[in-house]
Image 1 (cartoon, rainbow, N blue to C red):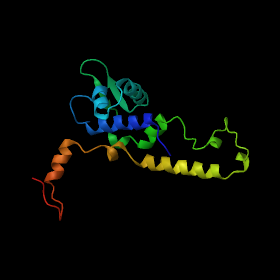
Image 2: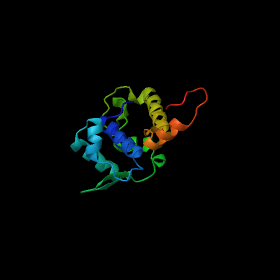
Image 3: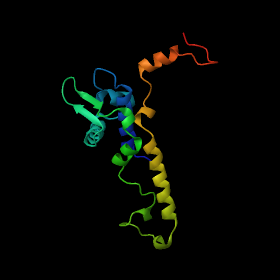
Image 4: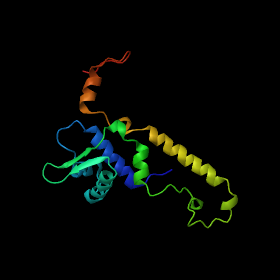
Length: 155
């Protein structure tokens, strides 16, 4: 199972937005491009798709940017992966239109790999942006003040 660079970047955009969702100023494409060393024009295309699937709200112009349309806990990684990946054909025989495999009608490998793909996506469905987003600054400050048995407090 391999995610495309497009999906990787889409997840980075969403995790970044989730990490800064409490911020008054919206997140900008330039900010994410600089933070991850990704082309602004490439990110613009990805952000358009994320807005089209209903996970990002974008505002153009001065003071514009983007915010999550739903709470991070309501956006599953599986949903994003399904929306941004072009297909899940692990091997040529998965494609009913382009398969040149001579044994595909009698092969059990296809069923095994289809089950593996379903399991892979099921795991991603259980994970949300809230699970993946880096801790917010306020959470880090609170965590430093919360004693953990056996761990010395940070000053």
